Length: 276
Image (cartoon, rainbow, N blue to C red; front, side, top):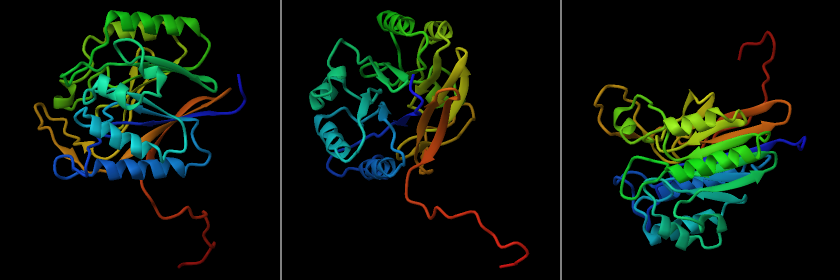
């Protein structure tokens, strides 16, 4: 394995609309994506790849995917796409014919090795449904892929979280029947993270003997309301993304990063004994 770190940026839940339309008449998701791309491009060093973990567009329309593709041309690093419940597999494939990993099989599962890290993407989208599911063939594919490289640090990725978060209306839309997925991951200790989107909040929990991480939304967040039967609301809290850094000999560290332009950086310096 290399002595150099491997860095994977995870962006999620873009919900791109076409023709300048706002989500919920409030959120400019296209402008938010452009700001996210500017933030990613400014990272030093830049990530090796950017993975976008689903809900790429809002209604799965061809014009939305074209708007997404045009925006992603500004991204200076390679990027890989996953489907969420707002996506349409066929329209996504048609819009990105040069992304060969999207073109095989009925579901959009794919695998990739980046530096020292292996990425395994599971398509948990179910057409016309908000909740997620992975079938027996997908689970068999995952088990075989993990068995093929037992010593390589691995990220397993899917759009829908396989656990409850306490936000009632989102828990009704999580991954269904997660026990089989949990059993497979628990058999493979090289899985460093299970990465998800969908919740539009940054969350972490133990799952199958490893750490499950949910990326925040790229534009808007789901309101933090832990009451039973709490309403389905969103808030314009700061957007963000996750940065997963693998360093041989040290392991995997995940950073939550804010999207936007902020004052600084400034050196840490104060004059001892002086009151300003």
